[in-house]
Length: 252
Image 1 (cartoon, one colour):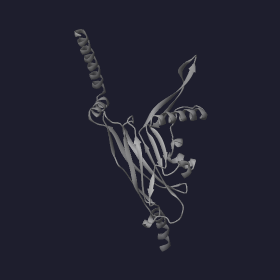
Image 2 (tube, rainbow, N blue to C red; image 1 turned 135 degrees about the vertical axis):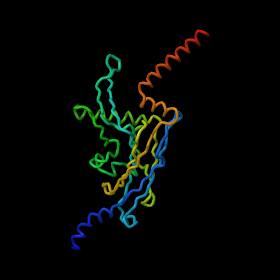
Image 3 (cartoon, rainbow, N blue to C red; image 1 turned 45 degrees about the vertical axis):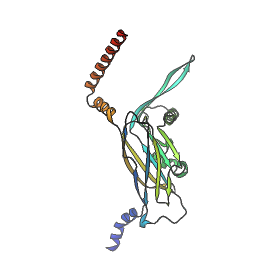
Image 4 (cartoon, helix red, strand yellow; image 1 turned 135 degrees about the horizontal axis):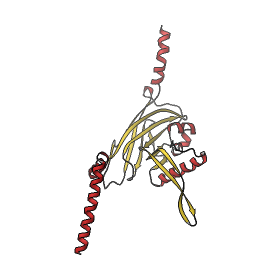
């Protein structure tokens, strides 16, 4: 009987033997107003080890923090120069690409985990699962994926920063991630991964809401909830402004 109880309790004891992440973020809500120029998020937390003891061996423990924005459908077009003029050539649509992606790590991600683990957890820009809506050859998909990543990297929407996570005493960690002004509103996720010997030992997620505020929020909600009335009001306002401009011009 005692042996049976020990066998049943073994999985629970093994689960308790794993470290646990306790993450948090400086802002759970980011409000975008007309003067919004971006925000800097501070992601921090603690690593709770079994028995409260940090492993005494020399094996290194790493932390990676990944912030993702809402996914969206996007079409990437490739330009081609014909007779001295640049025109749109081949195009590829992605069903779900993150509108924002930022990874911060305690050291280069390739030195922390292998390609398979990076792909499973989408750790790093080269491991994003973008879901192309096409049967194009793999080399074509790879070319467009590199173009999409590079395009968003230049816009500040995709970043990967090795060495940006600071770990203190093997227990406390923190990282700063910049959110640019042109970011898409919606629900963001901040994922934290504790990695050792190439294995993800623990993971935790916190949500961040990025939303419009003030007049911008009123306009966005009106367009979403009352699309027809919003459209009619926009047309009426345009006509009114055009009429007012005409009257002023005639008086001048």
